[in-house]
Amino acid sequence: MKYGNVNLGQVEALINKIGGESAIARVLSGELVVTEPGNAGQAKHAAAPKVLADLLEQVGEPVKLSAVERFVARDKFMVNRNGELPISYLGDNFKGNFLDVVEEDVKPMTAKQRKLRKSSVDGPILAALGDKDLNKVEKARVALAHTFEFLKTADKSKWFIFYVADAKGVLWAVGADWGVDGWRVEASPVAYPLEWRDGRRVVSR
Image 1 (cartoon, one colour):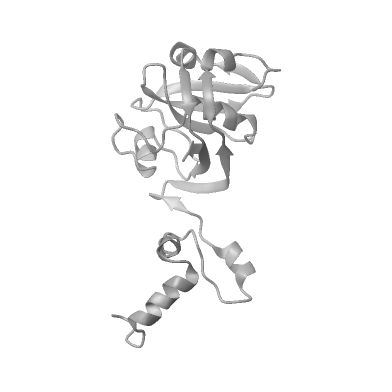
Image 2 (cartoon, helix red, strand yellow):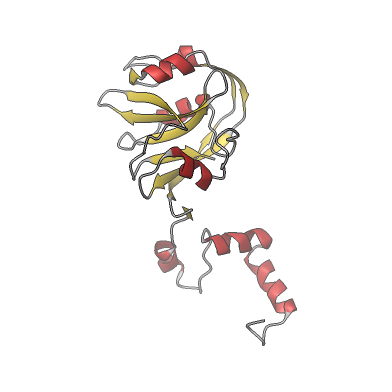
């Protein structure tokens, strides 16, 4: 052991002091920072951002999205600049694959935003989120109902990426950006070599 003057009892007391095993994991990941009294303000500004695979940096505050009993895409996603969600454009891929989506009993989720630190295709992004098999994406997947709800309050100056299943259960990358008077929503296959530019925000659990 590197620190010969520290015994196991002291180590256990320290773990209990900072909040148990879960707190240890948060300290090691950089999510939680332990500081001396009086330096809390400095630590808040000095804490390193949480980064996944040197590709995604968590930004902004998590957004709590409620459970949805039933979501019918055709009734929600329509070009209407004055609608519940202002939409100015729907891409052909989106219209051809998502308007028949009907989701039942969608569970609540907390959506996190992660900024792309460098340009990337979908595969490395999904792997960084914990999904290495493009045919079995679960951790990065977001319900279309939650995509709709998230965009209602989303920052209109940002471009967002969601990984969503279509009416046949096939996963797509759904991109959304604000076009003056409404959201422009498009979709591309995750296996297609489309490179997302750095700075765009991936929304997932």
